[in-house]
Image (cartoon, rainbow, N blue to C red; front, side, top):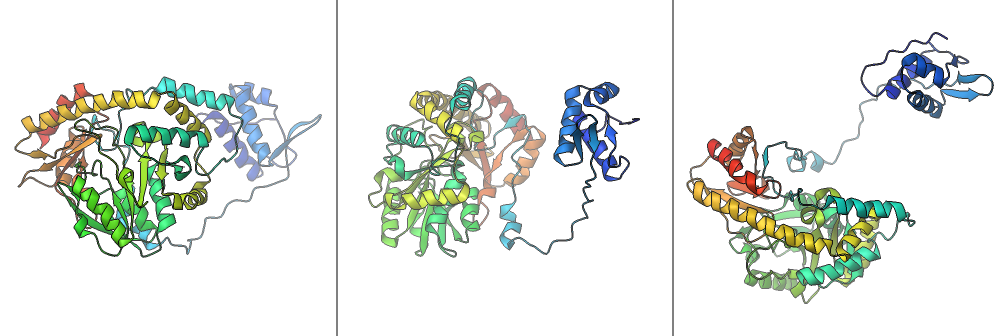
Amino acid sequence: MDLHLHLGGEGGLAEQIYAQLHERIRTDALPAGTVLPSSRELAKRLSVSRATVVAAYERLAAHGLIRSRAGIGTVVTGERVPATPAPAASPLRPRAIWSAEQFAIPDLSVDAEFDFAPGIPGRTQFPFARWRALINDQLRTRTDVGYGDPAGSARLRDALARHLVVSRGVRIAPEQLVITTGAQQAFDIAARVLLEPGDTVAIEDPGYLPAYRGFLAHGARVVGVPVDSEGLMVDRLPAETRLVYVTPSHQFPLGMPLSESRRTALLAWAAEHDAAIVEDDYDSEFRFTGRPLTPLQATDKEGRVLYVGSFSKTLLPALRVGFLGVPATLGEAARRAKFVADYGTAGHVQAALAAFIEEGDLARYIRRMRRSYERLHDLLTGTLRADFADVLEPIESSGGTHMAALLTSGQPSDTVLAARAVTAGVNLGTISRWGIDRPGPNGFVFGYGAVPADRIPAALAALRRVI
């Protein structure tokens, strides 16, 4: 049979062979009953490996277009795949909320020489070899490959509960923990469990937009509450608030902690108004000065605090593992909400993370990164104060993986200056974009996880040239 195929276009060789044979069968250029060359013969004609032709033939057979016949070979069947008509314009439309600008997906793949975007932890010191060994061990030895408990593996929840007591003074029983796909799913579960459509949620302004979007998507009325040098202004909370979202250890994006008096006031306010508090303790492990800040959850006597943490900033965002700690009265509801959301988080990742915690790897890594982040924070703060005093006013911060600085009076907007900085290879977070009810203050957020210490002077020199 004289079968001419032309290879060398887009796609892999097996894909090209499949596509050309598929088109000829569909258009009857290769009618039913046609005997195709053997895979060995066609591979020789096309100067490709036999495995390449076998892959193309197997795909055609899976679609019922060819089949093997004993004593004859590979034969084109009489089955035809009808041409797919162009789809009609669908009458379906999304809810209006999904067209709102605040739900636009930000560009998370910025390619800049100096990336100061917040929320990116250091990568160069992560123990990839150790993590690969743990993952490979789980893939090699695991036999429990079913769904498992939607709340997470008992082993990981036990290990995490012990870690939280030691590292943060947080006492949560394993059965009160739900392992989530990052912090964002923890907010989602909290909303599913506690909120009715139209309920009021209060969030710091400026504040963490992903949490804002999550509560808004559940039909809540989300209200921004101003912050000052002591954090959330508790006396500005609307009386009808059902849930308060707060970042008390390291306010996002400005960086100050919630003062002791405000912490006491917030817990008292929640008790008086029968409200819940979602505490996002996102990078509290990395505190550089002073005594560790006690989480709200650890001083909550009434069971009103839902405690959220994530390994996205502690370890790597790609792990997609977080957790939600809830009062005992909400434990089973949170477990059911997790089941509704996605049945459960990947089992082999949970098992590897449990081993990482149990064997001390997490504690050692946090200690090492705390020292690293402190050096970066001090270098960045010192350089800003020395070389940018006429332009930027750093906000006092004593921990975390980012710091903020306000532009001095008379400077252009942070979005204009950030666009200029990109031309010099510097990517910055802008504070104004984190506003809830109004644009945030004019300034920058400097995430220092992704810029090595020896590159910070060059990065800030490039920034100085453009602003």
